[in-house]
Length: 157
View 1 (cartoon, one colour):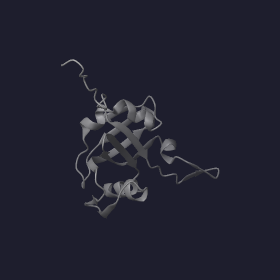
View 2 (view 1 turned 180 degrees about the vertical axis):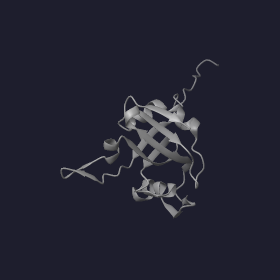
View 3 (view 1 turned 60 degrees about the vertical axis):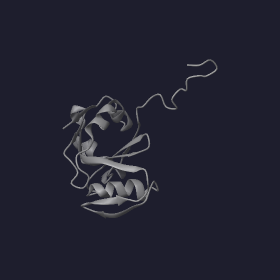
View 4 (view 1 turned 120 degrees about the vertical axis):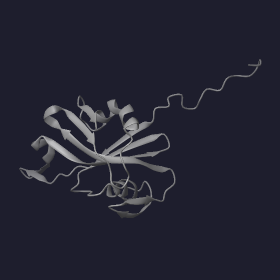
């Protein structure tokens, strides 16, 4: 390097994506007039999930089938309804994200087994294909904590 010149430091030396986790819950069970989580009472919660990215952020969105029957419904809810982006053509076969920068990295099913302190990610989305295990697995230590389930183990199938 010549005198007077300095080495540029990268803007983001940590190349690990930022993990954002959103979990829609179905609070339909009633206990003494106040909503409770039916899954925690039964010992198990399950549903579908999708993995999205935009820029350096990875978004894991979980939702019970009772709220979003198709993976495309999860994308629509998370992006369109919550004002993050425009989505059209939502069906069992998928959807089209109009807003630039968003990318779907597949989806699947999840099961939270409270009695085992375990979160199981399995299967695939008919619309978007198998989830990117490598992307999600690399951030697995953060997933349980961001779901409020510290101490739970994650299992990928």
